[in-house]
Image (tube, rainbow, N blue to C red; front, side, top):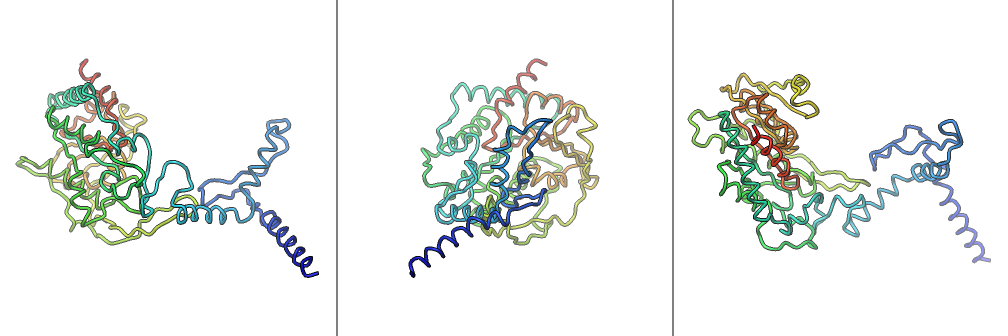
Length: 381
């Protein structure tokens, strides 16, 4: 008798578990999954495009998969279990965890670069040297200085945060090889930064442990800015003003990053807020100059910089998201071009007519093929 009663309780309990997700199904037409940051599938329609909906079974499946009750909670529980118990991310191949759950990004040839498997051939190094020298000579002919700024992937500065299953072979990477080529075979001034970050990481967090795995921290960005300005001021009689720590309010904030399923770790890091801003941004520069059509630009005028120097910085989100306003405080006019040095580069230069060009590139997006296109076009002038 007791066993039958327990069987009934078990059956009822199991039936309730099956029915509850249907009872609490999400009927909000505009519902969004906070865990996945997307709109949920809409109610399936019997008719579509004037006829019977041939995809009705799939639409019903998608609707139920998206809207069954407690879905977000289940996704979150699974993602947290995957992270904390099994040490892996639930949302695909782009992210990898370090030995203490550190967040790392994996894209392009980052693993091969980290392992030092994709070194340049002698022929490739010859082309790199020739291309950069061609660009340097072109700019010198316009009385314009040219600098190369190297940003780094997180695992180069913090290999201890990278998955231990990935081994390095030797201590000489493709990027090291590239910088050596520029330094020994061209007259392009190089701002390498790696040794500065490695030296400072015992004092500061220069790339996040559990924050943004793609970029440097605000402290790392400030170090990068300072080193660039030091290079620009070398042997210069009238030196550019350089922002110092005293120009910022610096406090510690939680900059931990949230991932699919609610995976998040606290990451207390420095937050830099500039006290005074003198540079003013022109919102419509790229619309007013056809040479930059389809390319995002940021144009600043600073009448209090103490100079009339025009600087063009060609780079990526390391500059755009972190440093464009800081650089604009040092120069009379600053143009940041969110792109690579490519086949339109000469038209940008001739349109803007800069006194200084800084080309910034991060390891994983090293677009030297595009540099070759720029040099090839310039050599035909």
